[in-house]
View 1 (cartoon, rainbow, N blue to C red):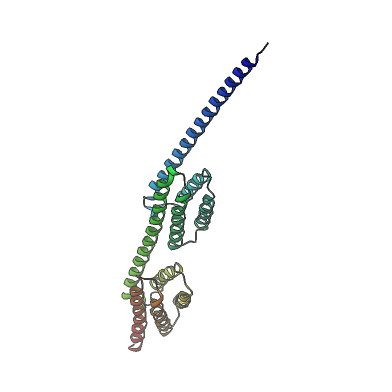
View 2: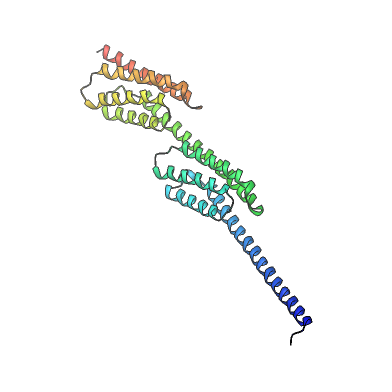
Length: 268
C-alpha cells in the first residue's frame, strides 16, 4: 500500500526527471540554433568571397547560381525583413534572365540590394550581424565596380569610333567600312538610356541606308553625316558625366567628315 509520503517522493522524482528532459531538450535546441547560425555565417562568407572576384567575367548562369545561393540563405532566416531581400533578389534574377539589362541597371540593382542587406543587419541574429554587414558592403562595391567597367567599355568604343571618324572610312565612300563604323556608333547608342538619343539613332539608320544602296549621291551622304554630327554634338550636353567631352568631339568630327566630303565633291 502506497503511503502519502511515498506518493510525494514519487512526485518529486517525476518532476526532477521532467526537468532533466526539458534542460536536455533546451540544450539541444541551443546547440541546433548555434550550428544553424554557424552554417548561415559560413554560406554568407562564401558569397562575400565570390563577390570579391571579377564580376565582369561572371557568366549569367553563375550569377543566377549566386542569387539562388543567397535566396537559400534567406529561406533559413525567420526575420520578416528577409522577405524584402528575397523579393529584391527575384527582381535581379528576372533582370539577368531577360538578357537586356545594361551594366548600369544591374549595378543599381546590386547597390540597392546591398543597401537592403545593410538594413537587414539590424534584424539579423547577433552572431550573423558582422557577416551580413560585410555582404551588404560587398554587394554595393560590386554594383559600383560593374558600372565603372561598363563606363570603361563605352569609353573604349567611343575612342575607337573617333579613330574611324578621324580617318577616311566615312568620306572614302567605302560602304562596307563606313557601315561598320555606323553600326559601331549605333550599338553604343542602343546601350544608353534616354529619349534624346533616339534622333541620332534614326539619323544613323538613314545614313546606313544611303550607303547600303550603293548608288547614293555623295552630297546625300555628306548631308546625312553633317546631320548626325550636329545631333551628336547636341546630345553631348545631356550625356552622363565623363562622356560629355568625347561625345562632343565625336559630333564635331562627324560634322567635319560631312563637310570634307562636300568640299571633295565640289572640287571634282
